Structures are given as C-alpha cells and as structure tokens.
Amino acid sequence: MSSEIRLATPDDAGAIRDIYAPVVRETAISFQETPPSVAEFREQIADDRYPWLVYEREGRNESRGGTESEVLGFAKAGPHKSRAAYRWAVDVSAYVRADSRSSGVGTRLYDALLPVLSAQGFYTAIAVIALPNSASVGLHESMGFQSVGTFESVGFKNGDWRDVGWWQRSLGERPPDPDSPKAVEGVDSERIAAAMEGGVRERD
Image (cartoon, rainbow, N blue to C red; front, side):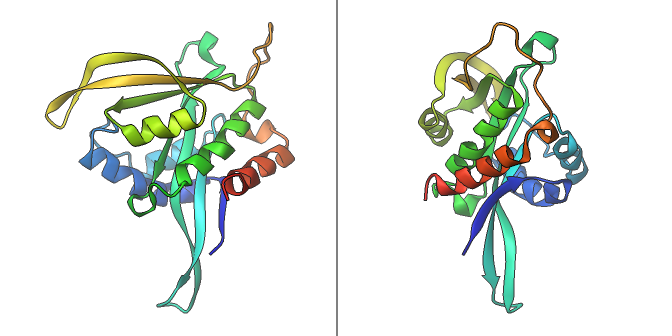
C-alpha cells in the first residue's frame, strides 16, 4: 500500500471531521464541546494563510475490486494570537484516526508541516496540550518541542478540571527585521513538494 502527505483541500473536510469529532465528543484532549461542522472545516482549510496537511493511504477495496484512498490523519497550523506582533508564531496540532495511532502518522505529518511553516516565514511553533496526554507530549518532544509552562485547572471537561501545558519549538533563526509570513500559495512549489515527500520518506 502506498501513502502520501499532501496539502488538504476543502474536499477533505468530511474525512478530517470524522477523525476529529470523536476526540471532541469522547475525550478531554480537545476543549471544544461540539465538533465543528463539515462546512466549518471547509472554511478553515480554504484559508491559505495556514497549512492543513493530510496523510493519505491507498489501499485495496475488496468489495469494489479496486483501490481507494483514505485519510489516516491530519496536521494543521493556525494563528497563535490575533494581535499583529504575534503573526510570526503559529499553534500546531495533529490528529490521527483511532485505528492508525502509534504507527508514526503524526510524526510524519509534522516532518512535513514544520518545513512548510518555516518556508512561509513563521519562526515559532506552539503546541497547547490538555493534560494528561502522554502520546501528544511524546510526539511533540520527539519533534524538538520544549515545555515552557503549565496552566493549572484552566478547563473543565468530562467532570474534571484540566491542566494545559505549553510546548514551543523554534522554526529558524529570527532576523532583526522579518518580513510578514507568506500564504501557502506564496511558497515555491518545489519546497512544498520536498516537504511532503520528506514527511513520508524521513521515517521509512
């Protein structure tokens, strides 16, 4: 079976929601209480300022006698804060379908996402993790993120007060007078392709 990492399109919204909705409904990993709709995901994915990536695997469909692709996970970036001076920092996250966790999908997605963000001109990636979550902490620390603090009992979900940890990683040397980050479409297509290919190849 072949696999690839690619930039998500609005047509991936349904598959992305299928992965994310159980996390919202069944866990405290996400502090959302109602999963976003497919339409809301489509709108977010269409925002070209921040990349969304999907990990897609091609497999054989026995009932149809052919092959079809399925999305096993996604990673995304978004604004860290709305005020202008924060625009070089992004919040990042990755989610993997339940039957594909602990298989390296999240790591591969970050292997592709972080170079894209660097190419856009972002300099800091931040992960905000509801605790406890050893899998997410392990993923981010394996990717070079460092713990920078914990907010204690700042969220209440599923009957308990929840701590939230903050992890941070530099995406490159910070210049004295940085240009504003580019949209994804402003990045050279060869750099995007290299990042996608590197995400699959790096861990194989």
